[in-house]
Each structure stands twice: as structure tokens, then as C-alpha cells.
Image (cartoon, rainbow, N blue to C red):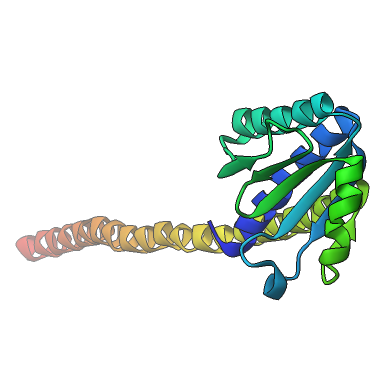
Length: 198
């Protein structure tokens, strides 16, 4: 998997986790695209708020379950599930933070990551769709270029039967030469008959 493919895969995972947050009524869900210099290993933070511990746990559990079922991806580590005030799911390339609203305001991760680019799930989804559409367009243009080269390759073997046809022509000439000699033999017999009369 190339670096661009890995980044694209990470974006799809983040998008799936963000969709879970929205389905489970997480509030003020944000995706922070982290500055590579500032972020260390992770590329994205996904942050959402829950109104109570039960909802926070339900959001975190559903994210884990969905990513495991659909992509075979498991969190590298999980913290804070027992308390439910701040649950952190570390997927290495991205980290999910499920906060109770007051905890989120207290820690204010968005303010601490000033260099990060904040996106709503809808904005993030639109960017991902645009990137995938561009990739599909590039793949189609490559696919259209391939039949042209295949047609050129197919045209080369078509010249081989012409060579075979040229070789067949001397065989016809060879067959025609005995026919020419046959009339010559008749001429010689015709000459002998008048000489016998004399």
C-alpha cells in the first residue's frame, strides 16, 4: 500500500467513525486534520460530545464494532471507558475523542491544536468524495489509453498472414512450370513426323 493509498484508507475510517458519531447523536462532531510536523504519528483527531456517560460509551463501542466488522481494524489502545467522561480510541493514524460536554470544554483540544485544520463531517465527506472522483477519473483515462496500445499490438500479428501469402505464390509458380514444359514436348514430336516422311 502506497502512502497516498494509506492516507485515503485512513480518511475512509475517519469518515465511518464520524458517521457513527452522528448516528448516535453525538454533538458538535469535528475532525481536526493535524499538521504533520505537530501531530507526531496521527493524521486526524475525531472529536464529539455526549450528554452522559452511557451515550459516550455507546458511541465508542459502536465505532470499535463498525471499524472491526467493516475494515478488520482494531484500536491500538482504549482509555477512559470505565468513567465515560473522556473515552479515547487510538487507531495510530487517527484518534477518536468522545467527551462529555463539560470535559470537552475543560480540555479544549481544538484550542490546543491551533495548527490543525478543523472540518465538519460534511466538509470532510465532500473532500473525500472529490479525491475519490479524481482518482476514478485518472483510472478511466489510463484504461482508455490501454486499448490503443493493445490495438497497435494486435495490428502487428495481422502482417504475418501476408508473409504466408507471399510464400504461397512461388508454390503456384512451381506448379505452373511443368504445364509449360508439356507443350514443348508436343512441339518436338510434331517436328519428328515431317522428318520421317522425307
